[in-house]
Length: 59
Picture 1 (cartoon, helix red, strand yellow):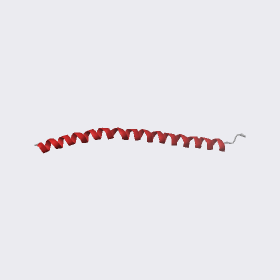
Picture 2: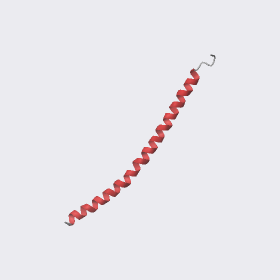
Picture 3: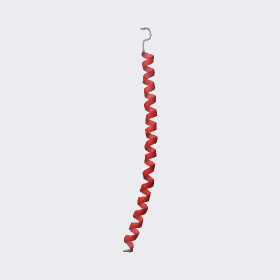
Picture 4: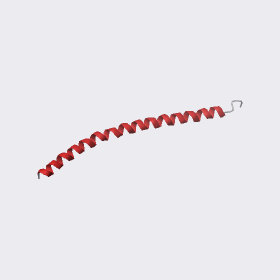
């Protein structure tokens, strides 16, 4: 029975590690989302700038 108790204690430690590691991917996801939004904004700005350059103002 002592071996089973040791295993249960080890499981508890593993569960604590899982809780701590669960927070890090959320921060990474937020960072990746922020980077993606910045890229999307830059691409939109380029697209709009191209439209302005192509627009015929002599109408």
